[in-house]
Length: 217
Image 1 (cartoon, rainbow, N blue to C red):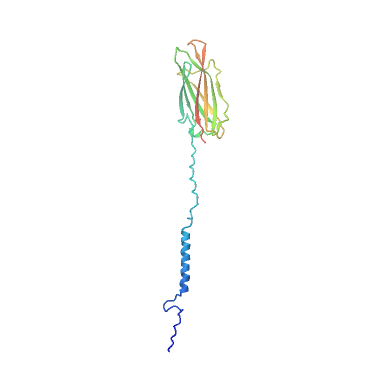
Image 2 (cartoon, one colour; image 1 turned 45 degrees about the vertical axis):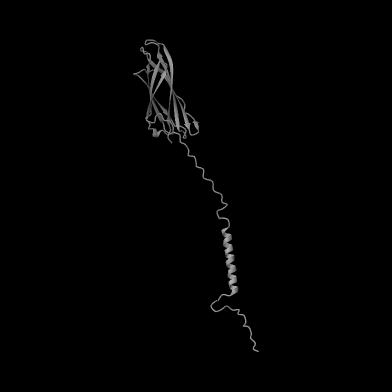
């Protein structure tokens, strides 16, 4: 009887297949782990998630510049005022250029005043007293003012100012507080009006006026 023996099992890879079964198993496990890692990463929180949106910037309010009134912006101005039956014409001017009206400068203001009468029987009109009070304004309010200016005549009854005559005067505003931005000049005119053309009696009338002038930095 002939005995046949089974061929022993082959444990090595066949020719042309360098990868063993165990090697394939390890690579498959690694690939599976890598796939799992990628899947978990894809399902993770986005890097920008949880970041709060920054509040929108609040627009800044621009400061409002307020224009300063200047009655002498063109160098002169004319005002019409009344005192009882008298109609007054006052011309204000300055020989100093407005661009040079600084707080430190001497600032001249000239005026010319004349009057006409509504009921004119030939009476004359006289100025007995003129007063100027100056108010100085700065960025935060009123500043120290200069002393009042007074022109009181020693003539009796006063300065003749009925047209075609007129009263003229120049008031010089000296140095002010360096922070001054404007001045307001308040004028008071005290008049004496003849009751009749030949009378030595007079009626007193008072007129008030004012101008504002800007002070440049």
